[in-house]
Length: 258
Image (tube, rainbow, N blue to C red; front, side, top):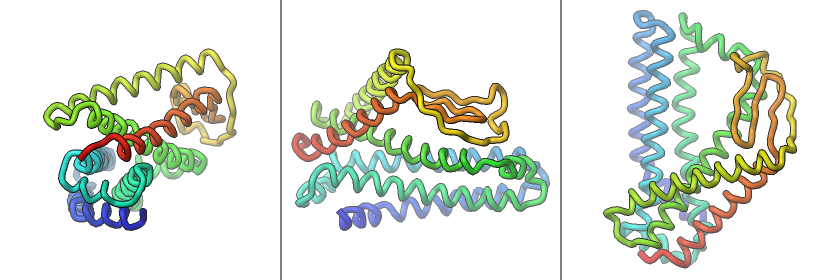
């Protein structure tokens, strides 16, 4: 699997390097406008650059997976003596590497902004006691990234098995993704109501969340004091995503014809 990861990274490093360079140039230009525009405007624009960087990265990662199923490069991958699960795992690992790279680039420039005179908004946020929130946020981002990619990959692989043509495969994969997301969310919501048992993790966020002091999700409720996890919903989601991983690997190994 190591060689497959190396091959995947080598195939995309140029485009991701170019993306990071472009994002860096844009952020440098924005930093030069700090005195004229103010910290609020610059922070907002840098956030837009970061969001665009992540969206473009996601599109590239999805297309990389899709090309393995629909383009000639898939012949090399699927003729290797390696299981579909390992191919999928290598794709996920490489995706995390690229998202980590773009995150580091964004973090560097926001860190520069923090140390720049006038960056009041960012400095106030960082000055708060957010260690617990940051740890859970990083873990949450990694988990959400993997689960999002698993649903997308499964939708693409299932569409490839059901319909081999490429012209409408993108639309069908999108429909499958939306339907799958809704189904997972709906069942998780129902489980939360049927089995309300929860697990509480103490946090100290110094009222960082503001407003009513909470962030709600189907399986997780985050407040200033606690991280509350619905046990049934969380277990269900874990099992679903394990199933998506195994199912996608199976489709890639046994059902997909290049």
